[in-house]
Image 1 (cartoon, rainbow, N blue to C red):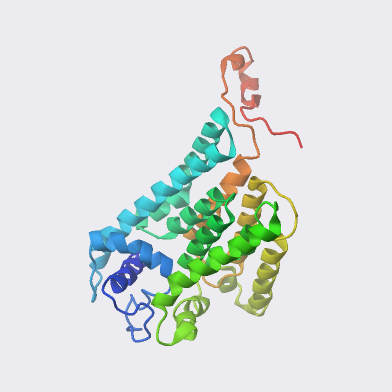
Image 2: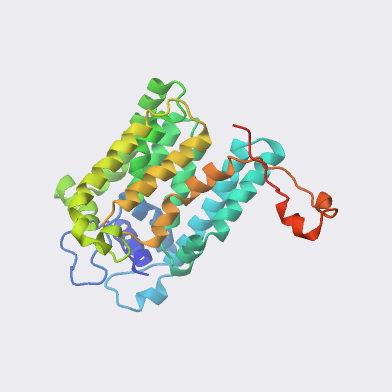
Length: 325
């Protein structure tokens, strides 16, 4: 798709030392915006573009030739699966951690939209990977700050997680928030400043978020109900307020609660967007999987006791035991 192709074209501009965010790009071209994403996304696509080069100018045949986009999608998908397995091992000890990790990895592998992004070479698994990586670094304020900044510098949406991730699970809040903020700011500036266009922040905004804000898609709520567009700024303001509120309420939370709150604020953001596509579900799916699955015990389960039950009662045997409140 044009998503993967645009990612490679932006990476090619970086590799060749050309300006990435460029107002002179041909607006009539179907590839008019190989510069609508954040700098981290294009930088992380550079190795794939270098291994499987793609050069401008391009035509429709590029969709068949964009091997780098497909390899990148496969790579980020596999790394997300492994990161979810590692998250399960981190959150639980021993066999329970192994089973939780396998459950999370299986959920990702069998999720229809992770397969959809593989089929068409989208770049959204990269967002999912970095969000999971930030969860893995939850005990390290500077580490999760750096990884949240990296995620926010891909397709911008994970920036809404920054207030929540800044306070983490609530322990030693002031110190950890300062470490998070410093790392987040340092990484964000290190990624943006070298690629900032001549027009500065204003031109960067116009080429990225400004462009995205002006797009509509039939699958977004606001495109379906254009008469309610006057509510959209209010909805977006509410998302910002929610993100700030969740940074402080509740004061203490478990890692799985933090994951679910992150998924909730990401869903709220997506509902307020003018341009929405189904692969954006991957931005919050790993958070939802982690929070929901970790709410249950993960133990080996034998079907031996089921054999003595009447056939019609066997479906009532529950392999998952919910924790007591």
